[in-house]
Length: 268
Image (cartoon, rainbow, N blue to C red; front, side, top):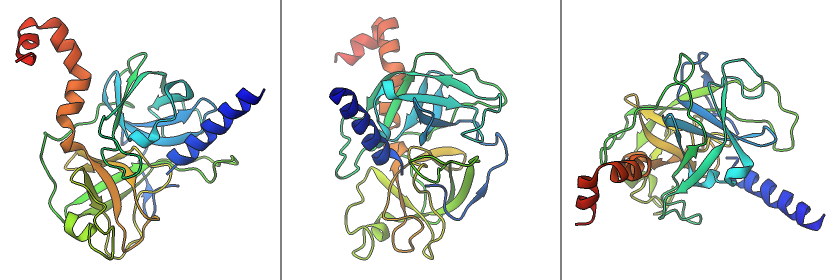
């Protein structure tokens, strides 16, 4: 009984840490307009993070969304996260691959890939997310879009929650790192986005979801200081810094096992 209670407490604390509430200052997204967005839910059905389907077997999300593979379910084709609409597909994780440089204290390299036990079926409700090339960037002021869900509370009492979305401009690392903002805590693996007037941002429950610029996922919702604060833009993991790692994780073992030439090259 004691061991069970400890496990429950640990899972609740992990959920609390992962649950980063809804899009601030945005609007309801059109039904099934963001088809690569998935919901990460606890086994009890609690949405706690977003993610993006980047391969039929793989989901891209934030490392801080890790509550353990046995404790989560991935749902694609969702629109209202706590209402069954008939468009959803469900899959349990097979493995969670956290980037080796992830640091929970600094939020550096806050990126994770989830391999699913079964592939998602691509249709008019579910699609794959396009990713940027390794090392590419987005100019300051470029307007991007972040989307996600949120709940009213961790304890329950949820009302039907519909996918929401908001546009935010890219903020330079220099400004984001200034003494009156994040004061040097933004690493090269992060990008910032938000208005100088505040009011529009991602927030709790949006973590792990996509920041889309030019139709590609350049950011993963990672952390911040409050939500929609004029001094503190939202902070996102810079996906283009990890494109090579993403491809190696998804395709590397397959290519090396099936192509002896590539295996030989990898040994050089």
